Length: 176
Image (tube, rainbow, N blue to C red):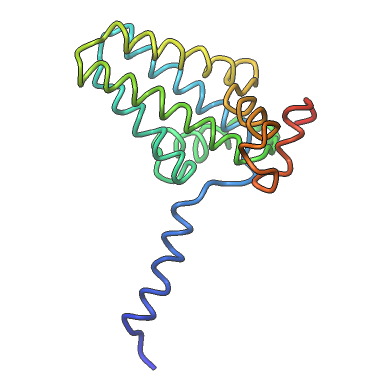
């Protein structure tokens, strides 16, 4: 039997599912390096007054929410080039809270882009980016993932079902 349209369609969604997926577990070393890249990009946006870079930041977060590092230039640089050259042992952590944290970054960077480019409110956009920088510094320098902590709080409140991430309870208790 030859390959039919039905065969291709059956393979297509599987390939799409593989593309649109987030790794679990996640190497925290890489996550912290990506956060460091976000700090650099967001600070460059503010310091050099380049609001168009908010779109680049937002795209990076969108790509990482949808696919992890697969479609993110920063994610690719970190996971394929930087992390392997560091020679540091990987530290695996639960993926769902990291994906949620990327979603928070997407919300902040998109808000900054809309404020700066849609409404011409650069000052307000840069305040939002400053908050993003603060969260990314906490992650990159101190290993404190603010988005992961919010995710754990949402789990404790019953908003995020426990089956989404059994390991996520360890984050709240400090055993991560």
